[in-house]
Image (tube, rainbow, N blue to C red; front, side, top):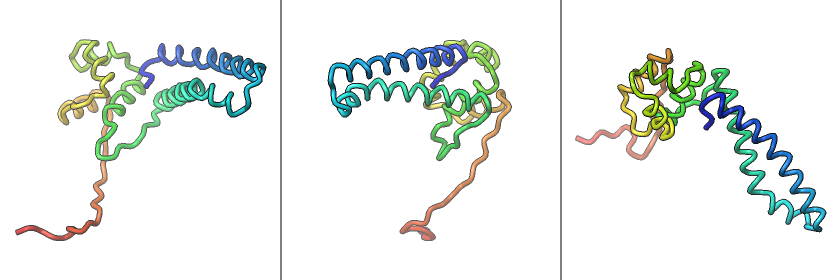
Length: 150
């Protein structure tokens, strides 16, 4: 996950450089007489990494626009908190000052995607970032549905 503009700029530069390297390798492998499936197999790891980086840069642009992924059973709450900080244009240093912790703590929390964060801390961060999370509860029908143990 790209977490700031500096990482974004580096990723964009890397994408451009890798595009050229991939194409150069493709031409070299073809010139060596490799069959199309052999060329593909040789390039697949590079292309896969390249596409992942493209996807991450596109996700960062969406975050900057305020387009967030939904949550299911609170999975992804850490990524959402990081996304909100990015959307608000706060550096980890500025955010740390607002929540009263050291910048290194924010860096660790984000690297771990806020794993194990308490509900109280989530609420405090959401308040500081001027955001709220709404939820809908869906109860699935199951074999014990409607039965109450006495």
